[in-house]
Amino acid sequence: MFDFFKYDFGYTWYIGYGLAIPLALAAAVVGLALWRGWPRWLTVIAGIVSIWALVGLFLINIAWGINKPMELPVPRFLASGAGRVLDAGAGSGRAAVGVLLARPKATVTGLDIYSGYWGIDDNTPERFMKNARIAGVADRADTRTGDMRDMPFHDGEFDAVVSSYAIDHLRRDDLVKGLSEVARVLKPRGEFLVLIVNPDWLTWVFAPPIAHHPRPNPARWRSLLEQAGLAVVEEGMKPATLYFLAQKRAG
Image (tube, rainbow, N blue to C red):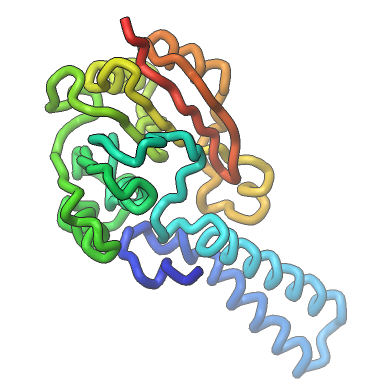
């Protein structure tokens, strides 16, 4: 439950712990109101804010596990448990470590430009490998620095590709390029698991630090995946997430 103290995925403080600020302020108001005899309505409002912030912190850090290895939303992804996997936009390794823990015979290569700022402080290959070592899977992990719009790999190198809240950050034309590259580096019938930020009502209410993304259009994503030669075999939603599992066409 408390693996978020174990790993070092490096998400900036306001994403994981930003709600601690309104929690502290509201709790202080409750304490002062009770001590100084302030109006009861003020105590009630501050108490509600405290509960809201606590629920948000629980959801972000424990229930959704932003600082824990990603749990695969699709059990059928790489169901054999073996194969070579690419993590496109790997960052500090949350998705890659999740795949390696769930699929004990798989290997994962993390690909990231490792420049610019995408919500991770000190986003480096070293941080990726540090988290792989913490999980005890570093012997099955490696990283490459490169752009998912022009991947430094040969055609058909990978059995599967995962992109967790990464490829969806590309602009439309770049997204088309990125999905085309995913299809190119996959083997025929290779699998692509993509997780997309979906700011649903629960996210807006309890996790506003991660709700600033536009809401994705599932029909648009299905169309883009099909255009890239990736047939959708499963789609669904989880808190803050729209996901698709697609398969590269054989011919």
